[in-house]
Image 1 (cartoon, rainbow, N blue to C red):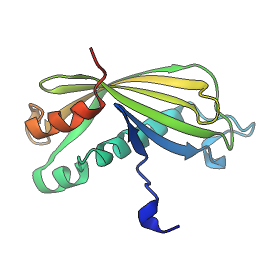
Image 2: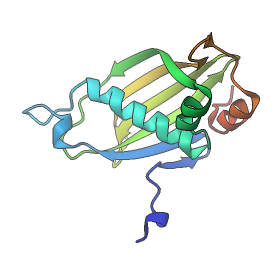
Image 3: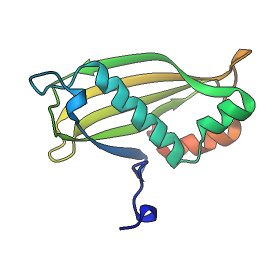
Image 4: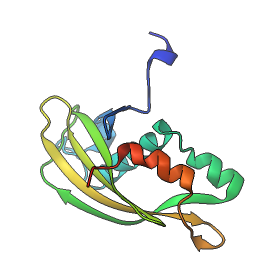
Amino acid sequence: MSATQISLNGTMSGNKHFYPLIVQYEDTDAGGVVYHSNYLNYAERGRSAFLRTIGIDLHHYLKEERKTILISKIEVDYLTSARLNHCLIVETTVTNIGKVRLNLEQIIKNQEDGHIFARLQVQAVWVELDKGARRLPDFMREKLKIAEVEK
């Protein structure tokens, strides 16, 4: 299988982005249970992959324009523990696109049976690093709408 056949950014299906990962030894304690802070890492990877998948290259904006999306708030409900070698999916959807803010829901679940380990509510803000929060650009709002939950 060639590298062009494999998408390391996951995939979109409908308005949901799915990012797969496997729990590694480094993610767990001695009992093989995932450390709670690693769910934040998994969610970050899922969000980054989602943005790349829909054509938003944050690295470009940060480097060239000193603009980026920053997380302003995260609420996590830890429901049960994932364990070593579990195959997980980080499911990301957009719940609201405001003028400046963006709200996402992320669900981390077992790839095999859909069992949910954690549910995150994420609020992000588009910022210009030297000036603070700014209005989300229209082109970005349009790209984000692909994953917006119907109201």
